[in-house]
Length: 252
Ligand code: MG
Image 1 (tube, helix red, strand yellow):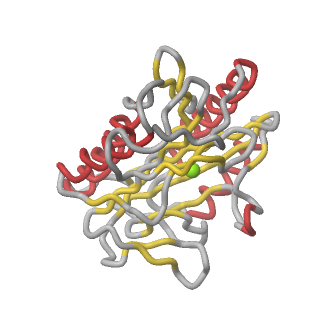
Image 2 (spheres, helix red, strand yellow; image 1 turned 45 degrees about the horizontal axis):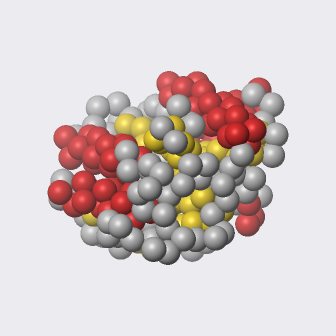
């Protein structure tokens, strides 16, 4: 039974602040939703994210992180993650993954949602539904006494049972006083493997699901990750605390 000594167990006081950080971020997404629509540029959406972050008196976690230029990563259609907001105009039928991290009183929260613009075709809608559901399947395994591999495996099994593929090149992570803490949380793996889960661990769980093959590549801008086969990809993420009574979604 392997236990990872680097996984930080949060105190009840820390959990209260992480919960606040999560709840503010969830509110930012609620405020953002109606602005993700046809005719908007991804830069305009990012500007709104920046305003909402300021209005809530928190700090952006991504801006300046390893030189990332914006407050949000916005990844459209075949873009998987880490898209840089820009002049690209959204149109009906697009799927738009928005990923935002914030810092509140020194504590991080991280969340991503893939929005549909206008009416989606049925395969794109299914991709969004399956990815969101895969995240919930993973979260449902985040109990003390379970293993990290139980989360990973539940996500992978669900996604593959729906004939989509799970991205291997990017993973979730622990979160707390830093944006990325141990452990890495793959969205694929075997049950009953990896670190034992304990109450007080806080994870950012974030399946990225491709309609086609799982392969990705990074564009020349050094950030934007796209699918190798140019088929669409979706991404949902929550910051989740493991408690004695089970998983608590902090970004809710
Ligand atoms: Mg994350």
